[in-house]
Length: 226
Image (cartoon, rainbow, N blue to C red; front, side):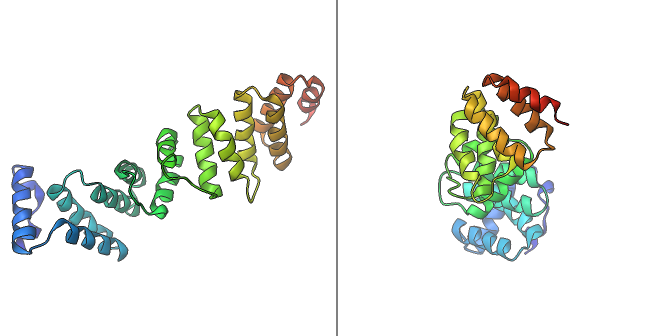
């Protein structure tokens, strides 16, 4: 067990450290990658995150660029509070294989808080959020923010079920506005404004949409509202 206690920093090279790890795990303990990754999953399940962090460093030295190990490392960072770092690492590890939806959704929420819309779009184009309203809300806004207005519309409409929110209506209105469909833009801005008449962004967007749709009378009425 002594070799496990020796810190990485005392070795002059990663190669030498890898030699020591191979000697201990592979030659002495007769473990292979599958058994070691299985142990990492057990540590994760038992919520032994600090122990897992040290173990994953060793796994990364033994099996660099392994997507499953990278994914576990990302998940563990998220659990340890390094959320942005963990989410980005986890997302970068996804290679199209079966991945836990729970962790995908957790990472997506973190990326959304960080406004990393392009990363969100690239992931959710591979992993369809289905009928999940929260994921469709995030996906739809991310599509809009990356200039994919036409694609954003059906996704945001899915987000309206079961609860219609002012924010989803706002982004639907914006998406239709970008497509120069001003009648539908007005429709969704009106829906959003009725739900939250104190939202100044919705009010401004609705006035602008009325003008673009040629409804100057309603635009003037909205301007007079306080």
